Length: 417
Image (cartoon, rainbow, N blue to C red; front, side):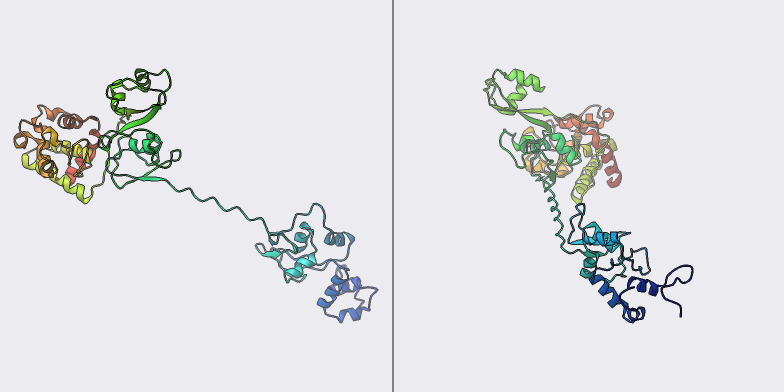
C-alpha cells in the first residue's frame, strides 16, 4: 500500500492524506484514521488547531473541504476588528454568503455561529435563510407608519350651497369643487357627502355672518370676508372687491348705513363665473324618470312640439334636478320652482307636477291666465335658443344655466317620449 502522505493522481493529495498531514507529529496515521471524522474535527476546533470550514453558498451544492491552518485564518476568526459592524440578533443570508464571511463581518467566531444555529462545518446555507448571531442586539424597531389622516366630509342638508359650505369651513370654493370633481354649475343634493380639502378650520365656524338658507339655496357665489381697518370706507371696500355698495349692504344687512368700524367683519359675495358647459349628464332615477315622463305627457296632451318639451325638461332639470322639491329660493317650490307669491298657484298646486308642467307651457291651457306667462304665451319662442326660451318663462337670476341641459333633455325625450 502506498504511503498516504504521497501525492496521488495528478499531484493531488487524497482527503485521507490531508487529514494525516494536519495531524503529523501527534499520533500515528493509522490511529488517526481509526477515529471518526466528526470527532477529529471537534477535537481540532477545541484545541484551536484549525479554522472551521466555510459553509457553501446556495449556488454551490457540494461539500466544502476543510482548510489547512494558516496564521491569517486563525487571526481573522478570533479577532474583533474596529471596523466590524454591530451584530444584529438575526441575519438573513444573501447570495454568495458563507458562515465564515458572516462571522468575520460582525467580528464573531465561525464556530459560535455554527453551534448557535446547529450547523456542522459542511452544512449548506441558502439565500433567505435566517441565522442567529451570538451576542447580537435586537434590530431597532421601525417606526410605526403614521395613521392615514381621516378625510373630512360635510353631509349636504337642504339649503346648502358649495359657497356656503366653503365659507362655513374657512375654505375657498375652487378647492372644494376640485376635491369633489365638481364644476362651478354642478348641483349638490341633500344627503350627498362633500369632501373638505385640507386647509380649513375642520369644523363649521360662525366667525362671519352667513346668508339665510333660503337665499343660499340658489346663490352660487364666491363668499369671502373682509375685516375693516382704520381709514376704510364701504365704497372703497366694494370697489376693491368688484361688487357694488348695494350688494355689500345686502350681504351684511347694513340697512343702508355706510358706517363701518375697524375690526368689523364684512361678507363679500361675488358671483361665480359661469363656465361654458357643452352638456351635463344626469342618470335618471325612478323619481326623476317619472317626473320627466309627466312633463313629456303634459306637453304631448297640449300639443307642444318637441322643441318646447325639450325646453321644459331643461328648465326643470336646472331648477330642481327633476325632483319635486318642497323648498327653494324664497317661496319657490316644485319641479319648476314656481312661487305661490307670484301667482303660480297655491302651495299644493305648484307641488302638483301635472299642474306645474301645464303652467310652464301656458297657452290655452294656462291654469293662471293673465297672471303668469308660460312658454306658449311668449311670441317667437320657437326661434329662441333653449336658454332664451326657458329664461323668458322662469326669469331666473342665472339665465345662462339652462343650455347645459339641452343634450340630456333631448335624450330623455327620445327615451321616454
